[in-house]
Image 1 (cartoon, helix red, strand yellow):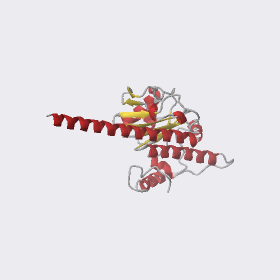
Image 2 (image 1 turned 135 degrees about the vertical axis):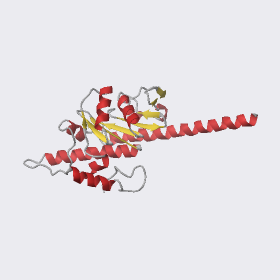
Image 3 (image 1 turned 30 degrees about the vertical axis):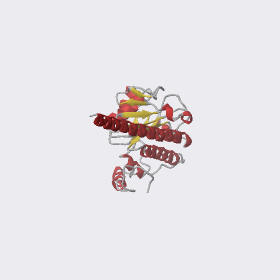
Image 4 (image 1 turned 45 degrees about the horizontal axis):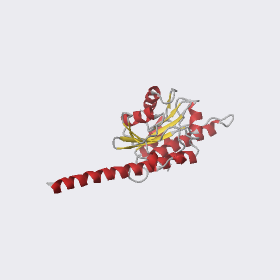
Length: 242
């Protein structure tokens, strides 16, 4: 009996150790992604936020802390109801929006930015015009969620409606949100939205000319082809354009 108890204890300790390593690895990837949003000019200062789901725990960037200062000891985690389960730093003020996405979709990662070109587009239209076929990799035309104060349930609800059958959206007078099966995929989709926004703004700025746009039928055809693009795996779609 003593041997059985010892084996059970060892198995439990092993599972907890593996879980701890999984959380530590995920936190490292999250911090690297958050720093990448700054390096690539998608956020300024501590704006924007990043999260990743590990089982029933959501790791998320803390509010008001520059990403360059985050260490392995700064891990912040909450459950799907928003109760903090890891760390002492307060989670991002946009936590309701992140949790709403996880509860409503199969997302494993969410990236929210204040990317300049995409934010500019969000003030002009209700949907990013079909300037490029890579919108098909995001599920269709990128919608703009109506404005609501940041960090509110109203904003979370607006975002969920804009994300219906989509993996990215714009937030009016605010920024972008994209989700995916990994941090890399969510980040790539964020970058794609910003790039398409920039292309449309550039094309629209030529005096006397209007950019040619794709039809819904053309986008649907491209989206179908994009489903088989790249190598097999969770990140097969939504990456770099062919």
